[in-house]
Image (cartoon, rainbow, N blue to C red; front, side, top):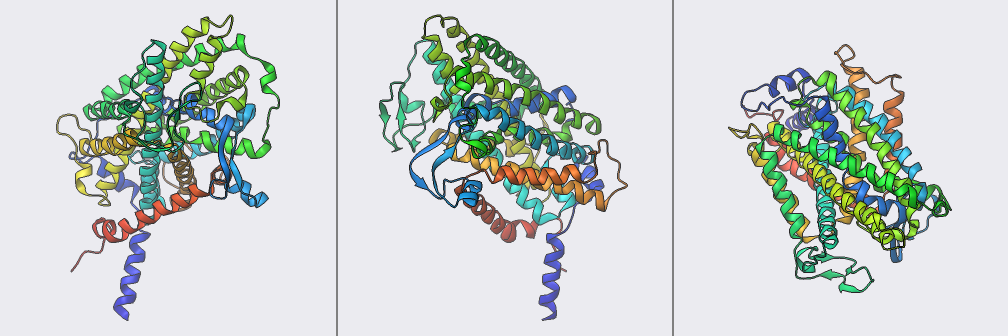
Length: 527
């Protein structure tokens, strides 16, 4: 009885064991695992913009505006907040309509609060791993495993969604040049809603068909090669893509002004507060860019100064651009017309270019397609960087096999984890339509934000004397508000997303208790 009690106490101690911040920093300086420090504030900001202004502004924004429609009412597809308020199942998810601008403002508030929390922790703990590392230093090993497992899902789901969106825009680019490749090699093998042409005619019925999304598969593997070669090449390539993408977005905004119909903005909020909340919840996954910036902390030349600048500058730039595109897009075409549209910006330009006086938009469409492709390239780049670095950090701590933290002798990058992450995303991207995984990325991102905000409060209590290159103003107010707003946005996600998220976490806990905890540095060693 005594030994069993001691064993339980030992297990409890391990689950709550926290990494010393000083040890985390020393471990990162181990020559065998050291990463090159080449990033400055401009590169960090470009990485953040590359992640945030990527797929969402060109693809998911249409779903956020128009919502999702199903043939029948379904409890599991009803947003949690709607069901809690009305106790009624819905036939889909309400869209924000033109009020998406309000949704984006709400998301900006949440990201601003959480971004400040990220900035404080990143300036204290400049180590690869992001929310995973922060929770390991503040909330203990079990919570760190949960958030690391959560981040793997978050990054993978986002990249699968982005790569499929990239393929759709490649098809649109080929269409601009009058090329129409065989549908089976440019569409996923599984199509839950089937595939239709612009005239609404079925190309494939819902379900499986013989095919593979080759553009989605190849782009992930190509960027994996870039990441393996090193962060310097990655940062330089990303800076160029971000510049091209921002230029394309600005061209769209200024070109769209002359074609806006103010009548399309009425009613402004067709689905009320429910639609505004759901719209914010849908678009939220693109803000994973904050987390991606902090995963590069160990490769930053001056993290105490540069990390807060990179995170906050990313927020300001991205929020302004999102709202500008949302206002223009809902002014160009009726908000209901974007249901199920994976390329709403490009398709809106295509429709208007066919109308009298709209020929100039034919060329604007080409620029926007190229900009969208650049946007998705930079998103994929940052998400894959973040995913491999989380695996690298968890492996270095013994929670995943050690091979994931091996560093390439020449390029000094975690090559094995980068390749595994690449194939883990590339193959499903060729097979599946990963729309539902965007919601899993949403709930994973918001869950990570909650734990990071709690981590700030915990560190303020446990280590108030530790130097902070950046400190969140207002005492505990901002971290507490961050937690509350994140939970509010999580309530806008469908009930089935909550079920899937808890199932994923359950699988992770099984791996932790049967594998990871026995190999952790905090595991009890046999005498």
